Image (cartoon, rainbow, N blue to C red; front, side, top):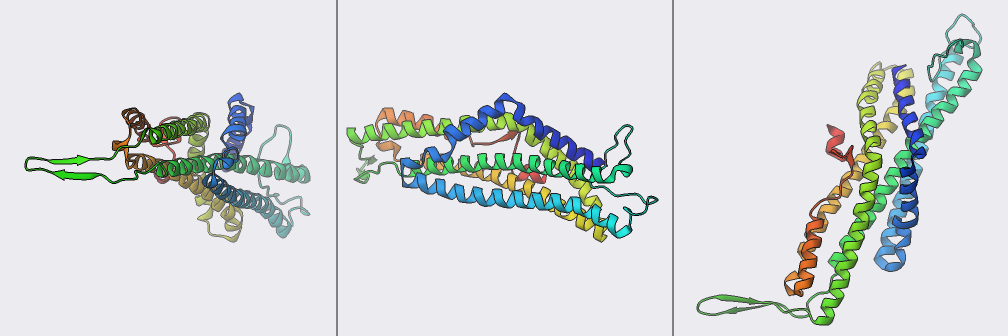
Length: 324
């Protein structure tokens, strides 16, 4: 009964999400501006990352929704099989088992078991689609963010290189290091590349902040749900009988599997974003013009703050949060 209530609350929250204006704005921006399909024409690496992200997204969505539907089907099928095995449908003195237990005023589910079974079938699949669907949407967001970070890191790694090496001059009193400088034409190219990197980073940060602001409370509730419902499902499995293992086993695997997948993907965002600062620091800034050095310094300062999605703006969503 308690597990049903927690799933109902989680499903209700997921149902209300599309009703918010902010949700539609984020989806519209994701599809029309942020998706890598709008960037694949900019170069070979852009297209490579786009195709890679699409492959991973397709496989993950297919796997997640297939397991979710399988889990919902098993969750509904087990009570029906138990009722058939015990003869509860034929014997009015036996209590009929349902997949979802709700109490309706003036309505006895035992007297309308066919309708209640069909209604529960709809409720379970609707809840599964809502929970799994929103998880898939958040996962697609994160995959696209990871793709943008990889592209930004590649753009930083492919800055123009010096045609000549630095020279070291030694005198009796001091050691002089002289570095060759970029030409005016090269500095113009570098200026444009720094500008593109800043604009790209601003785009990623802006979209990530929107996702974190809107989905942060959703993720917080999701972690709270796993904290409570996960313990209850493990308690049900501790009985060790075939009925409990068949009914709650797939459900537990799918629920914890989605938690692990989301936490690991968010952790990848944090890890990859930390590499951006190291890549920017390795650029030959000492050979650039003063203007480009200042611009690169500002970019480096921005890149030193990792890209993180937080729950309620406080707790970062990552593997450590999942374990704690």
